[in-house]
Image 1 (cartoon, rainbow, N blue to C red):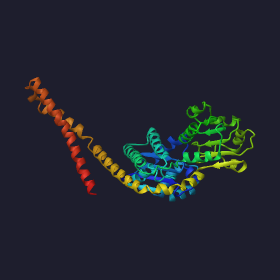
Image 2 (spheres, rainbow, N blue to C red):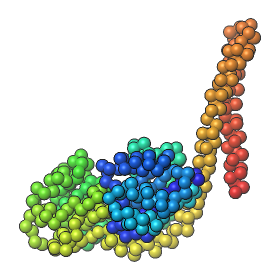
Image 3 (cartoon, rainbow, N blue to C red):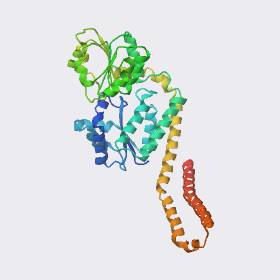
Image 4 (tube, rainbow, N blue to C red):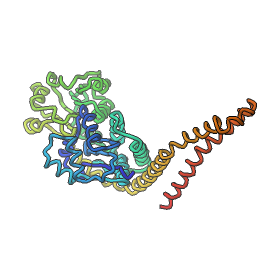
Length: 411
C-alpha cells in the first residue's frame, strides 16, 4: 500500500476548462497511458476522467512530487505549454500511500464530486478501471482497491441521505430542459451516446418526447440510444448534412475539441432564426464559443450545472458525518484485504513446496517401505498424506492471517 499514488486535477483547485485540457481522447488513451506506465516505471495504473476531475492512480516506489507530476502530465498532453504543465503540477492534489486509498474511497462515493451524492461517479469509476484493465495497466492491488471502493460507495448511497434530492449532472440538465418548455413534438438533437446523453435520452423517452435524432462517432451506440424514438441516428460526420432544424441541442462527447463550430451550427439551424436551447455537458466543451456569441441561444453548460448544484449542497452535507464513518470502515476493510493478500502472495510457494516434500517422501525416502504394503494400505496412506498436505498448507496461512489481524486491531 505504501506504493499507492494519485494525482488529482479537480474542480477544487482548477477551472473546468483547465481540467478539460487533461482529458485524453478515447482513441489515444491506450497508447498514451501505456507510454506513461513504461516511461515512469509504473507497475499498475488507472486513469479516470469525468466532467469535473482527472485522476491518475498508480503504483510507484517514489514519492509523488510536483516534478514527477509534471513529467506524467507532459506525456499525457505533450502539446501543452511546459510552463502551464508546471503550474498545474504545483497545484494538483497529490496522494501517497494510505491517503491514496482513503481519497479514492471518497471519490467513488461522490464525496469529492462537484455535485456531492451524484450517482454517475460509480459507473465512471468502474468503467475507467475496466478500460485500463483492458489496456493491461491494472493489477492485483488496484483490483482490491476498486472492489472496496465500489462496495463502500454502495453502502453510502444505500444507508445515508447523501443521494436524496437527486442533483446529478443529468437531472440538473433535465430541470433546465423542462424549464425552457420544449413541446413534446419539439425537434431535439442529441450529440454523443455515452452515459450522460444516454441517461438524458431516458428522461426524454419517459416523458414521451418523440422527435429525437442522435449523432455519435459509433453508430451502433447511436442506434441504441435512438431506439425509443424510432431509431433515427447518424454518424458525427453527418452533422454537416442535417438540415431539418431543431429546437433543443444536447451534447456530450469525448472529443478533445469543440465539434460544433459556427459553420456546423448554421447548417443545423437550416435558416431558422428563433432562439434555441443548447445544453453542452462536455469537457472540453463541444460547442465553439462563437456559436454562443453570435446566435440566439439559451446556453447551459457545466458552469450552469455547477451553480445549480451549489444550492443543494447544504442538505447533502448533513449526511457527511455518517459517510465519514463508512469511509473509515471501508478503509480498514481494504487494509485488511490488502494485508491478507500480501500474506497469500508471500506464502504462495508453500503449496508447491509441500507437494514436493510429499513426492520425495513417497517416491524415494520411504519407497522401499511402501513396497511391502498392500493396495488397501497404500490407499489409506495416500488419503492420510493428502489430508496432511492440505492442513500443512492451510493452517500456516490461517495462523499468519490471525497474527496479522491481531496486530492490526491493536493499532
